[in-house]
Amino acid sequence: MATAVGIRTVNHWINGRTTPSKSGRHGIVWNPATGEPQAHVDFASVEDVDHAIAVAKKAFPAWRATTLSRRSEILFKFRELVDANRRNIAEMLTMEHGKTLADAMGEVARGLENVEFACGIPNLLKSGFTEQASRGIDVYQIRQTLGVVAGITPFNFPAMVPLWMFPNAIACGNTFVLKPSEKDPSPTLFLAELLHKAGLPDGVFNVLQGDRVAVDRLLEHSDVKAISFVGSTPIAKYIYETGTRNGKRVQALGGAKNHMLVLPDADINMAADAAVSAGYGSAGERCMAISVVVAVGNVADELIDAIKQRIPKVKVGPGLEEGNEMGPLISREHRDKVASYNDIAQKEGAKIAVDGRQDPVSKRDGFFLGATLLDNVKPGMRCYEDEIFGPVLSVARVHTYEQALHMINENPYGNGVAIFTRDGGAARQFQFDVDAGMVGINVPIPVPMAYYSFGGWKASLFGDLHMYGPEGVQFYTRAKVVTSRWPDPSTSSVDLGFPQVR
Ligand code: NAD
Image 1 (cartoon, protein in one colour):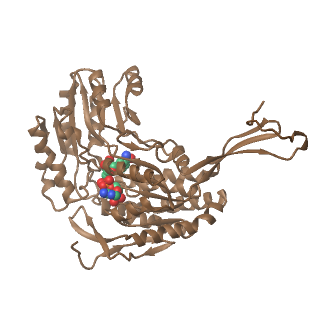
Image 2 (cartoon, rainbow, N blue to C red):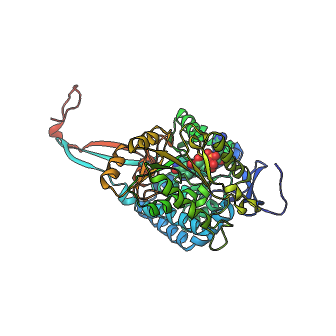
């Protein structure tokens, strides 16, 4: 791979310190706002992965035995450090991902909520106790930690998605190996330093930079007990199938195609504001971005006009420049792929209502692309079927609520979905009918709070348990049920029958 001289290298974090790779392989971290390389990132070898896992395994017994109060105290300190460094983290995110600073600050804030949730671990691990289940016998359940667990995360939320995983995982007493996206690897290294400063023992949290080599080794290593993955659907499926085949517990969150159903009675201005914000925010590179507006009945023309009026007002430019609302895409290849959908859509019979390629920003250095609006999009077209993951909003026109629901439920993905209406009954019916994991009612991006759990349905999630919140705690622990009797000679006898309680 071509290398640029004189730029920094992003290393691994193993056993409480930055650790250079022994592999000799690396990738380039680009600055999406300029199109220039800004760093090298180490790519782990199998030996690097084995080293990180061995370190995490060694740290496990002592960490597991650490009291809940102490674990919680470290997380509280970590929470304070992240809070004090919000801006630093956000700037790192913007530099490597490209999103605007305001958006990056939002990412840090939503990530922090998961640390706050994990601070309550003593309360979260309380279980049930049954006294006198049989004569002199008590039964109770405890939730115990798994061991070494791994997280593999995508480029689009380089801080928040890791924060969905490791606070709960380590709070539960596991040790953790994180493989962040190679496209924007620095924020997690900084989070590792903050954990260290907060007093986390060495080896409890480790970061391995890298590509498929690292992922495959994590998937096959017998000392890794569970894998949390977030990324695209083909890779999520691969992770789930390979990890479970190797006997691991796996939760693998995949891609999305989120619909926003707009009923004829909706407030048009509110719906248009929401469609523009949720369609083009973070340049459409959010797994909860709205990518299809399903306009019911006669609402379409008015809604499209309202969206078209708003698009020229969206300020696109480098994320670090004050006032910009949308930054560049993650890479040149991705920008070009997203832009290619306009021609494909037109050939397939959709109408380009606004062509982002014509926006002067698309000619700038850096991986910029203006906002595109496609009209008359239908199932079967590639712009409908594919997760484009860029600033492209499609409008599908249907006559009835039933047709809209059918379209949404037939779609292979089921991450987020939203309905815009003034009719409470219709919204309630939609919540009942729709096949998706997260539903917004007049809310376009319904990301659950940290005390619920995040996860889609269908091809948006492989596995059973959603991420973070109560289901996160469940994922990172396993149940043990204890049936106990303390010596009472009066109840002792030989009995070859199966234990009964009455
Ligand atoms: P990606 O699937 O390309 O990469 C995710 C991770 O998998 C990265 O760490 C990457 O290094 C690794 N990876 C990539 N190819 C691999 C391979 N062949 N074998 C093993 N590992 C591999 O995803 P991305 O482009 O980084 O992120 C965007 C995708 O993530 C979108 O599809 C988006 O919808 C999805 N996403 C989903 C959620 C969710 O909660 N469902 C959240 C954020 C992002």
